[in-house]
Image 1 (cartoon, rainbow, N blue to C red):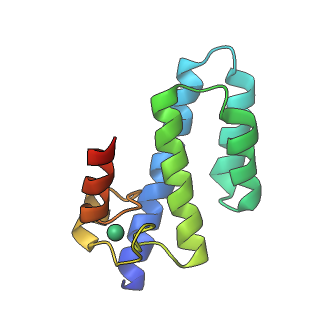
Image 2 (spheres, rainbow, N blue to C red):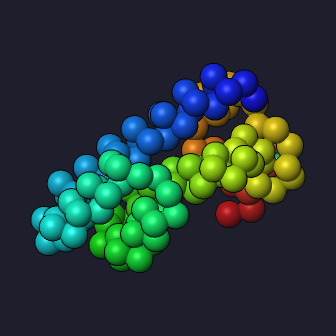
Length: 120
Ligand SMILES: [Zn+2]
């Protein structure tokens, strides 16, 4: 993948994460202080520390759907950092750029995703 494409996708993931965090914060009045603190952290950093905050402090507190989405976005950012972004987690094939542009957090190529959905 070209650096330019990777940077664009990474930025979209960061934006998506920010949006999800904000939405979750709005939904969850009770956990607001905590979520806001994490959003602030997230705004400044995408390192391991930020990931730990999501998993530890937020996983229990947020809407299941958005939580799953946030986890997918976060996992994609980890793959960007590790240099494996854009590779299918199942078969290791390169995921097409068109698919990543449509779904930047996609972790599987289309055939593997289809197979997985049929299994469930
Ligand atoms: Zn695959």
